[in-house]
Image 1 (cartoon, rainbow, N blue to C red):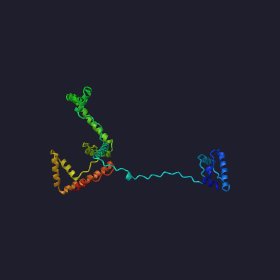
Image 2 (cartoon, helix red, strand yellow; image 1 turned 30 degrees about the vertical axis):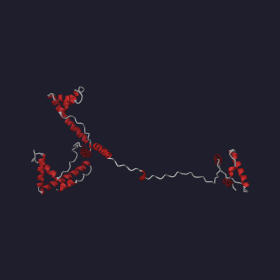
Image 3 (cartoon, rainbow, N blue to C red; image 1 turned 90 degrees about the vertical axis):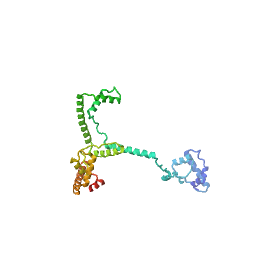
Image 4 (tube, rainbow, N blue to C red; image 1 turned 135 degrees about the vertical axis):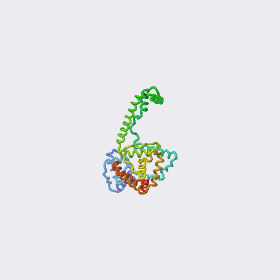
Length: 308
């Protein structure tokens, strides 16, 4: 019987090694194994040579497992199966009418902010362009601190009515100079933006006017190409410039011009249709030059007007 078999059979459990020192304990253990093997009518046990560190670990752990005994692998935790998203996730509750209205108002507010950023709604501040307004401003500066608002404005407006003729002439000259200064400041502000930015700003202003129910007038820029006109609009412009409808109410004059267009011979209508094509070509050419991009295609309304 080998000493490994004796160890597996439980004979090593009777060996007392705990009281022996570490170095002498190994020799004593070998001697006892030899005696056990002789008693079993077997050859001398040949202990396997192992590092001292492994033998010391046997005594420290009080375990005598042989080198041939495989160590048990540590158990690895099983991976948890992923939770099913369909069964675990909670279904979203439908929004209430109040929540839907809150979302709509939030989207509208964000849309208005974006349009205002594009619409260039902060032109340069204008100076007073009327003599009476200038007089009120001067009187308010004179009596500032004596009255509170709005009493301050009312007292200044009353005193502005009694200014002398010389003061009035001076204020009129100042108002005229302010008008020129306002025009120069406005033109400089417009020219500080590209024509494409002005075009996009006017489009945003038009949309803002519908959303907030407030009139945002378009920015005037002589660099922008004039839009192409239909044959009927060209005919109306000719009739208004003829002076035939001068002094007539606008609604009445447009009604009369409409009747003229209906009664106009087709040969004369074709003349205005030709002018319409030429004006469209002019617009496409200027649009490419000014904006650096092709003009948008004609709408369905333009095509119908061209066909009539």
